[in-house]
Length: 299
Image (cartoon, rainbow, N blue to C red; front, side, top):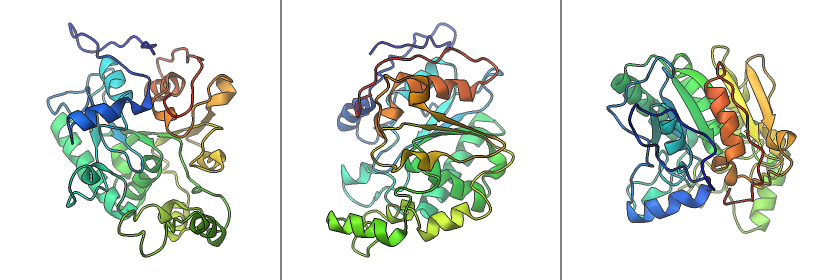
């Protein structure tokens, strides 16, 4: 799909191609293992007065800094943002490609990694705060850093694609785990924990979610935007990402565009959601959000 947003970018710089396909990041990872998506992790980038906050892209479970952000990395760079992305929660001690699968370790460990990465970005750019754009687990894990690890004063805008503030499966934990076990996957069992310590933590009713929700998931000094799709097949129900608050905007893509059939994956690579993200990052300069047909998975 052709680019739908004309980016400002740097003076004299040719815009990067923006593929509106979530899976577009897979081939670059295969050809350049451990690399960064084009437009991210330029440690010489200095924020402009128009976009003073670096944007940190926080991938989802089983993603990484390259596979998850083939769309947003060049899109944000073209728009003139300093964009950075990390891989967190990966088993780096294992050989590639297993070592490239992020979001596997417990949320507490990943949150500490995020905190160290944000500090590095702030030191390199001279910025005071960052904006976060997260997908799936990347919408929830940063809250642990914000609430418990000193991140609250370092974030301005917190934008979530397919969030899960209430966990996935908004029923009792025992019923959720029973369904997973029936399918042959015990996401919270001892055999699963070494592989994916975060998986059971995101199931509705888990102790981690209870801790994160205690006292509210939002911080009063941060502006939140939740972007959801009715066709989310991972966050069930999709409304688990809906959370009211005085400093929050909740968006369901299909309320704006009935021809958007994007699911949990494609929401991180489609132009409709991207339009809302750009608006949330720069609310003083709103732009029309497109409405186009979006297929599931690929975006």
